Picture 1 (tube, rainbow, N blue to C red):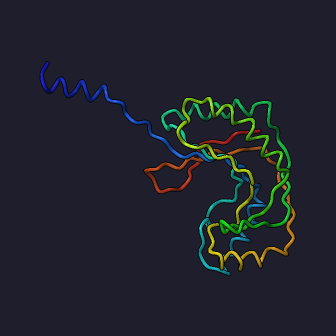
Picture 2 (cartoon, rainbow, N blue to C red; picture 1 turned 135 degrees about the vertical axis):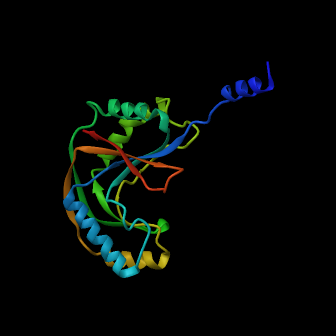
Amino acid sequence: MSDTATLQSSLFSMQVPALYGEYLLVMDPDVTVSNDVTYAKKKVSDLVGSFPGKHSLPHISLINFSGNLLNEDRIINAIKLSLKGKVRTSFVWLEDYGCFPSSGTVYINPKPKSLFAEIQKAIYPALKLCSAIDKSAKMLFHKEPHITIARGMTKTNTEKIWSLFKDKKYENKFIADTLTLLRRDAEQDGLYKLVTHFKL
């Protein structure tokens, strides 16, 4: 066998690393709630200027995981099958504001917490068994689901923002009938892009 043939043979037998992306499963509020969150973000911007997540769309993060982009259809099917007949359309109630001082986050508090835990519990076994999931990467289940207004604030700015919201009352609700799967690719601009929606 010639040197050229040997080289070609070794190249084709090499293990090609799988291309992975970061996935995020979220619940999106309706337009009324989204408008309220956008208005709250504007109030924060007026108070402290630009901040991380200023332009992000309102959502409730549920699960983060790493998956193989070449087998994305397996991930979609795994989630779809895990939700079928187990999670149904429900109301999400929003009640007042909260703060995570350690991460500089101010948010709106959604209820019932049991709904989010039910979704995570239904999806976890399917994702764990899905061959397209990167088993070496940690799967993150958000234990305190919330709708972020501002995050990544300095201690000073967090105190300013929290003083604006801590005594304010907020009540609203929306029908949770859809989950959204987003993906962020390492090679791209770091922004999440829509993959698909799952009807409950």
